[in-house]
Length: 321
Image (cartoon, rainbow, N blue to C red; front, side, top):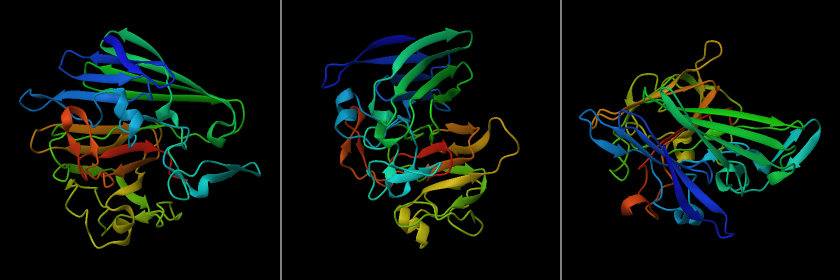
């Protein structure tokens, strides 16, 4: 493990970059600004190491314009309808930063704050404990929220995220991680050939502003059926209202769960490199986002231009809104 400077914010706050490595060649770089994973290097079937997550080379890119690359999302991941919610008979108004809705915690979510970072090393694993205090009223949310997120890289090529939060008032919270993955390597092209399996019989259809309608719809016979391994691009432009609303996939899946504990949510395979990623979670849902809003306007690491669908996200979560 190592730590180094990752630059400074406009107000002079210093930002650090932490590098976690395991004996298999897997390497994770994390900055305490937003808890952002800036690099995730893993071997392919032939031992070739590539960075499989999208992002920037420096802090400046994340400050200028970032669609939540690799960041911790909070206080509330995904969308809250009409930028408000009711709790115990009181209405709380939030910033509208996604049309009429609040997205990923508001204008200054957990992706845009500097977390306190404490590295650790134990037998077979190394990691980082990130802590942040969100004051009462932050972005309109009630209660002081003490958040703690632990990143752990193990010798088994596992990257583990543990989320904890406590509050002094009733509030809502939905923490997740927003890495964009391309298992063929950052900047290698689109992810449409990646083969995806999602352990879900149902999903939550949305309206035109991507807020769930309340229905838990069957994936049977729809472009949303990933219960068996299917290329991401196989039906991504299907003539289906929900596909049109999302510009592709940007939907929450109702995971098939049997009891508590970590259970398989999704599996992704890249036939070209042989890399496989499995996502296990304790959460009831996962948002599958196929990078539809990437449009070539972002130049990321090593001069890579991120065009449409050059990365995908699997955000474990409570259902949106």
